[in-house]
Amino acid sequence: MKHLTQNDIGKLDHLYKINLINSCSGYKSANLIGTKSKNNIENVAVFSSVTHLGSAPPLFGFFLRPNTVPRNTYENIKETGVYTINSVHAHNFEDAHHTSAKYDKTISEFDVTNLKSEQKKDFYAPFVHGSPIQMAMKFVEEYHIKANNTILLIGEVQDLYFNENLLENDGYINLSKAEIISINGLDGYTIPSLKTRLAYQRPKQVAK
Amino acid sequence: MKHLTQNDIGKLDHLYKINLINSCSGYKSANLIGTKSKNNIENVAVFSSVTHLGSAPPLFGFFLRPNTVPRNTYENIKETGVYTINSVHAHNFEDAHHTSAKYDKTISEFDVTNLKSEQKKDFYAPFVHGSPIQMAMKFVEEYHIKANNTILLIGEVQDLYFNENLLENDGYINLSKAEIISINGLDGYTIPSLKTRLAYQRPKQVAK
Image (tube, rainbow over all chains, first blue to last red; front, side):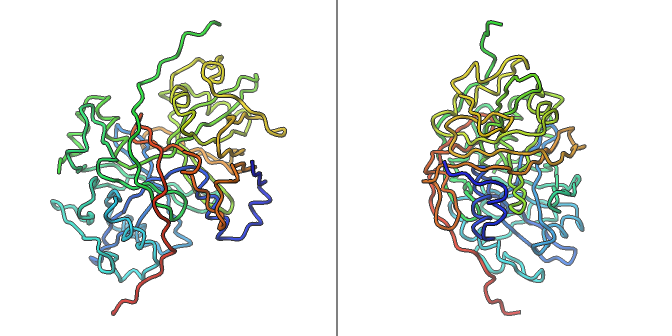
């Protein structure tokens, strides 16, 4: 196997290093986070770090790097307390990827892509029209990660919308039925197919 | 679309709810975390929450629920300061899944599955033999997540090992070449194929 020490990694060219390290932890989720500023400018941006924290209450977290990229998403959430999480799928992943371009905060990504904003009930933040899973989120708390000056932002699900044909009898949502995307590294997109579901595991009998 | 409010979700049966909420954020990474207690008992457990935090320094985080599951992984990391992250692939995902069974801390999951422990250099924690990507990790810091009493544990890569045939010219690791697994929900396993890599995105010209 190829072996790189911490020191070897530190010396790699920037782009090579971010390609490498972004691939090492495996596949990532692909979600569009929708927000709206106090001044009514909508923002939508792709994130690959949305992670399940717990189901009761239903909490998700994601990581932001406010010091290295425009922080529209972060600022809008802090201003308004709300955002949406929308799954990326086979029919919008190229537009989703384009939202990683660094636009000025006066420009909405909904205006420069084919992504369509959708309003639901009186929720302030915009959803992404056509996403098979859409969540209205309320900001709960944030943690400043000292190790690399990033932020973990945590929110709670207020409303959950999903295509009913994805739902199995036991509450499981089959992501592959909606051609939901998974990300490899910074820029690799895949459309997985469900291979198998395994049973809940109990310990085997072990002679002590 | 099917719509569930926060209140609806709260009233769902436990198993239905955890199946549902664990699916909503999309595909997850699949990794085996290897540790060893001070008393030389090895532990290996599957985690679907390993997330990239940054590449310089190379940092990964994952979430633990120390109050609801046996905390062998957490205790071993806090005792010894080190652990390993090993990718799950087509040939070991059933054994990886079995590590979610709740074994007593005196029992090593390496002894009750076909997973084989591997020692590298003088690193204290065990690797999973045959994993296409293996990382030696040093504990950096932890955050207690007040919202649901979980822990975010952050570590830095000390050594990175990977199958060289996965590597592309720009540092990208093609996970699909090693049949690395991605997880849907609590128990759905997939083996994605890379569809496409998209270019770095710059803003389009926009008339203001």
